Length: 331
Image (cartoon, rainbow, N blue to C red; front, top):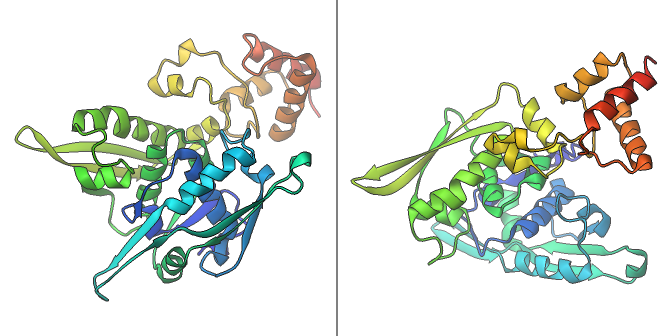
């Protein structure tokens, strides 16, 4: 499964046992989880092999929120990953296996002066066994994972993604304790369900719905006045273009757009990529009589803004783009 998608940089393939999170103790932080997804994506079809894998600091810095990392800040992230414990119970074999995600990670900083670090690692035996023996895989939209802003959203997203393609399954009911375990919430933290729902579940679902191809709904189930479980339902969006557009928009203002107070946030031109999936900017381009390729016009306009010292969320960014398109005209 992973080998077949080795050349698809938009997807990451995880063994379902890892994606579902109930097998992981000491869940890593948001930054460490993003590194984990990049590592598994880099390993691809070789993740079950006892071989050395590697990536460079420049690749890590391409991730959302990771561009300022260096050797000093990377070491604690790999320490978190090394401390994550995988617990896998096989009822048929009547065997419970406890092991780690990583065997060893090394940060080679011999060329640090030039800004070049090389990270190498070996996956742990337990993770490799999970990958080798797994018969179900979670296929995740990589950019969605990298743009989520909380570890709770990442852990919930990868869990649901592992269930999406199972036949006739469109929902799952979790006990409150199971949900806490999946989200990596330590014992004694966020004890009340009202706090869990308000501060963790609702924000995570809102962000997943905004940035992914899925729409999630959570329904608490009560026994008397006590919430005993929560049912999470999912469906694939008929048109995921809005989520794709949001991935290319500046992170600033994303929460306001999610809550519906978008009118309070300045419109911003996408900081990277094409405007292919952004009907607003495409319509401005068409109205200006420009037919340049959507990727090319975006790159040229960003370069023009940089040369002028204009921010992509400037008050008059729409007018500037329209004028730029009119100047370029038909090609």
